Image 1 (cartoon, rainbow, N blue to C red):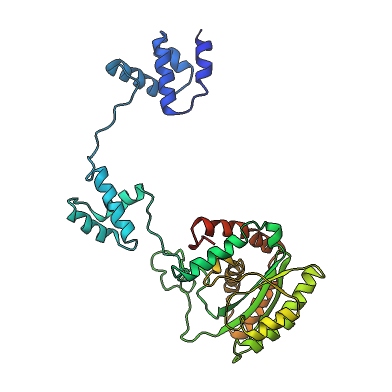
Image 2: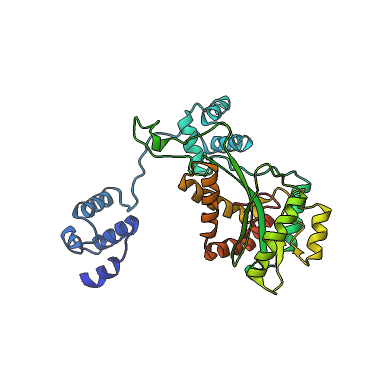
Amino acid sequence: MLQIIVLPLLTMVTCKETRAAIIALHKNGFTGKDIVATKIAPKSTIYRFIKNFKERGSILVKKASGRPRKSSKRQDRLLKRIQLRDRSATSAELAQEWQQAGVSASARTVRRRLLEDGLVSRRAAKKPLLSKKKNIRDRLIFCRKYSEWTAEDWGKVIFSDEAPFRLFGASGKRLVRRRKGERYHQSCVMPTVKHPDTIHVWGCFSSKGVGSLTILPKNTAMNKEWYQNTLQQQLLPTTQQQFGEEQCIFQHDGAPCHKAKVITKWLGDQNVEILGPWPGNSPDLNPIENLWSILKRRVDKQKPTNSDKLQEVIMKEWVAISQDLAQKLIESMPSRIAEVLKKKGQHCKY
């Protein structure tokens, strides 16, 4: 009879269920020694459960009194509202404001209460400013227009953009792990210079991989003449190489040199279809921004020491980007579109 009752109970793993199983065996007339033989729990645990049951007549564990909370649920909700009203307020500032409402608590208690509501202190994400009217409206118009596009549809788009690369740039890791006394160790500091060399590049990519990347010569302005020459020498060869005679779509943002009449006419003469109109201040919708971040991290790891070496490393790391990575970035477009729509035009996580 012992085996018939016990075997199903051996599958129970939680403390609450184990306690119930032990008491059930006890009620059925099994001794503590018999229950220990089942190995359902340690011997001391079994006898403690039986003792508590005999004393209180219940299998529920008596809740420890502990230290009483300094705040009620209503006061906790008030703290949450104060924090959401000013997201940048420190825990010490919140404690002072909370005290005015009658709650005497430390900054540490404030942090614990906020943590219970999932409010954790983090660095603020840096995103371009979105005006309540034009930017958000344009983002919603764009996302609604392309909301039905699949990853296969986005696979026909060539994304492009310009990006700056700085010698001793800050695009790499900002945090290091160090021991006491290593604060100024060479491996634990980030070198800076007053006027770092900056290299501007233009690049494009699609689901088929990275395309051309060109470096803007020093003392050359990013104007319509430079841009038309770049499109002629870099974009057209890329479209031919990646798509051949297949129709593709070109994406560029609303930079002044991109929207010049001469550029619009030239693209039309070349039968280049344009994606858009592209919404302003929307790097989160352009997967090439993620590609730039990846490229900058890889370049920083090489630690170039001069402008020539920086250019060399940029070109080397660009061609090393895999087609698989490029495709994954392109395939994220439906998710980007859906998230912006869900957030009613606000920034998304990308």
